[in-house]
Image 1 (cartoon, one colour):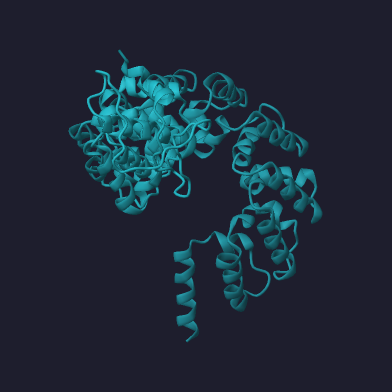
Image 2: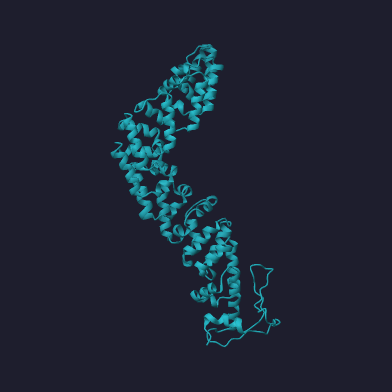
Length: 483
C-alpha cells in the first residue's frame, strides 16, 4: 500500500510524463521528466494512474504535483512541501490554479521572495482562506497599495485568518483622514490594534480619546492603538488629567506636545511626580504646569538627572518657590545631557559667575535654551565690540536672556545701535534688554518715529519699554497737536 506521504516519491520513480507547469516566470516551462529516460509526447488522453487508497482522484495528484513544483520556485524543499500538506490537508484538495492565483495576489501587495516564503511557512492558511481576497482588495483599492509589505507580512502571520474579517470596517471606524490613514497603519501593530479588538472596543477607545486629542493624537502617536483601553490608556490618561485638576484642555495640550508620555506606565509617572513633590517641595498644580511646558521631562532619569540637578539648584540657594519659577522657565535643565550642561557651566564660570549662587542658577536656566556653539559665538560678538568678561557678566546678571539670543541677530542690533543710532556700546551695560527687542518691528520703527520729534539723544530705555498701545496713543496725540 502506498501512503499519502510517499505518493509523490513513488510517482517520480515509476511514472514519467510531461506536463506544462505554470511558473512565477511566464517564460519558463517546467517539465516533470527524468533526463535519463525518453520523454513521452503530450497527449490529451494521457492521465497518470496510481492504484492506492490515499488518493481518490488522479486529477488531485496532478494538481498536487503542480503545486509542489510551484512551491519549489518559492524556495520550499520537498520536506517543506510535505509538511505543508500534512499540517493543512485541505491544500491537497485545492486546485493548483487557485493556489497560484492566491500567490499572485499576495505578490501584488509586495509579498515577494523571502517575505512570501515566511508568510506561507508560518501561516499556510493564507493560500486557501476566503478572508484574504477582501483584505487584499481593501489594501490595493482603498489604500492604494501603500501599506508596507513588512506590515502586511506581520498581519498575515500574527493573526489567524478568521480575525481578518471586517478589517476594512475597523480601519474606517478609526475616523482617520484618508491622507493620514496609511501613515497610521504603517506604524501600528495591525494585529493588536485592529484584528484582535472588537468593533465595540475600538469605538470605546476612539470615544475616550476624543476629548484628549482624538485622531490628531493617534496620527502623532499611532502606537497608542496598540494599547489596551482599560488597563493602559484609561489609567494613564486619567492620572495626568487628575494632576491637572480636571483641566481637559491643558491635559490635551500635554498629550499633543508629547504623545510618548502615554507610553509610560502610571507607576513610572507617579515616581517622577513623587520626586518633584518630596525633594523639590512642589505641589501637584506646580508639577503639572512644569509638565505643560515640557512634558518630555517624564523621560528623564530620576537618579541620574532630575535628583542631582535639583540638588544643584538647592545648593545655589533656590527654595521651593524659586525652584518652581526656574523649572517653569527652564525645565529642559533637568533633562539635558551632562556633557552639554557641563560645557555651558564652564562658559559661565569663565565670564565670572560664582558657584552656588542664584545668579549662576538664573544664567544656567537661560543658557539651557541655546546651543553651546551659539553661546560661544554670542560671547565672541560681545568681546569683538570691546566688551570685557566683566561687562558680559554684569549685563547677563541684569538680563540673563542675552546669553541665549541668536548671535547673528545680536550682532545686527549692536551694529544698528552704534552705526545708525550713533550710541556707545557701553549703554548696553545699563540697558541690556535692548538686545531682546525685534530690530525691524520695534527698534528701527520707534527710533525713526521719535527721532523726528526728540532728536538723536533720546533714552533707548524709554524708547523701547513703553507698550505698543501707549506708544501708538502718544503718537496720535502729538500728531493732533502738530495739526
